[in-house]
Image (cartoon, rainbow, N blue to C red; front, side, top):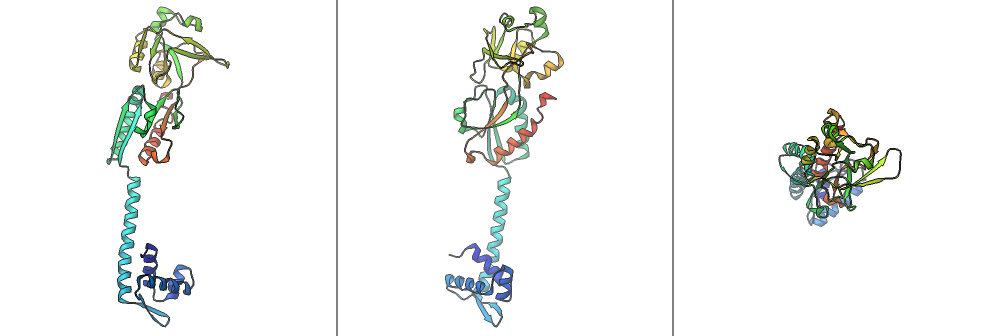
Length: 303
């Protein structure tokens, strides 16, 4: 069976008038060219070249092989270019799983823009505050906020994200601002149930201290929707624990006030989770991840 290397060799040989010229083009000796030509003729069982002193000319079969070789090599190059374009032209379906609030505010707009830039790509975005990471193979990319218990996936940090205790000025005017954890126990607390976390156990550490303190709250109001809990806090119904990405603007404008600012809560960094196998990370996934990182650097809520 003739190979593409055979075709390249003979097309080059046919473009020169002597074996010596072919040898110079290949940076080999003339005997090497002669030996390779003989092997090709033996493989095809036909004579390809007339030798006339130092010069050569193609036989009819050699002329046919030369013409076809040029066409086949050109088609192979076209195919290579097409495959290369296909590799960089994103196609197929990109499946993303993200938390409700963050996904709605930051992932959904970017997903729409990304699809508009890649018309042969479809994007499916599912929003859930109780993602099933054990079904990670069903998704190209999972956006996660907070503690992560599944270590089988590749984690890529998208943005740092602090957590704060905060309440509306109207609540603090009515009930006062707690100065200690003991005082906090006496206040109305709000709970956001998400990520299957123990959301009624608040863990805090006084600045400069290593020891972590805990507070078990009995929430007067609880919801699985961050927008609901945030609105309750804005309306003065209690104190909530919430991510910086969601409350930074309201804190900056005074609509919400930090509670116990000398205490620090565990960060809830925003991360992207990908399949552990390289074959699970497609070009469309990695390019969207790059776009996502750029959109969150710097984090919009830090401006």
